[in-house]
Image (tube, rainbow, N blue to C red):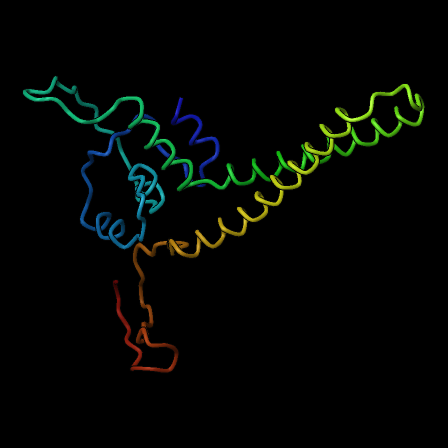
Length: 193
């Protein structure tokens, strides 16, 4: 179920039911090492760099001795949250839209309460409906504000991670300049990089 949720909202497709144990080429390892992830979700990071993947089915035998420290439920939740928060902004957007919808609902309720008060006059109960609607409105506005703030923080987070927008597999007849900037160094031509 966790893989299904992650794949519905993730920015990259992540193969289902994969483990962290894998055979990788040196090139893939070097590209993974270049990523600056502090809470790495390896299954997503391998998909992010975009090299072809294939599955190798094997039978996992019981542990020979001792016991592992991995908690099947809490460990899986931690891994799942790393996948959701590392590869999707949907939770931030969900918070923002929930706030906007709550604020819109409470605005409609405010109009409804005022209309009932105008229609029924002094016989309409004062206090509880008004306070409830106003608390909902303030809560909705706050949640929407936190969601908007979260959108900005999500963009900052994307910039801080410095994930490459693409990885160049190879270049043919490319002109490479010094990394210090344009015009510095002597251009070099390489047939293969």
